[in-house]
Image (cartoon, rainbow, N blue to C red; front, side):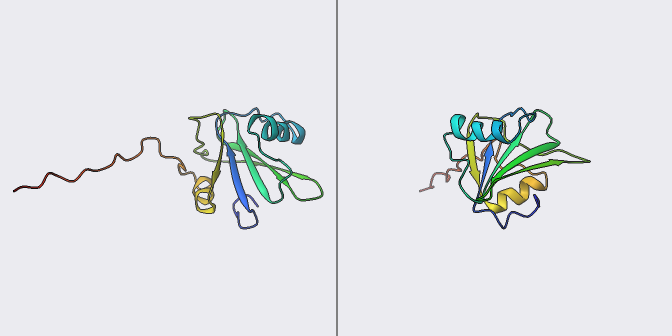
Length: 120
């Protein structure tokens, strides 16, 4: 289920570290109070990652209740953005890359290339 994001209207990462010992109520509180987002927004997947990057939790409101998703990788790790303590919406393509182990946020953005001066 977590490898295919086609059923989600939005995907939101809780950037930084999250205590994955928390359950549905704790994660919903983080979404509501820390990130000022609505955990009851239907078909929005909120993703959380702890200090160990081989596991993530997902929280999804289905309209009649929450779905708590947990994924632990056997080999490898998720390349989770740790730079800020905020929520970040990602595209379905970025989500697919994240699930495949790639970075979804550039660590060192490419600098703007300036054209060489014209020779007269």
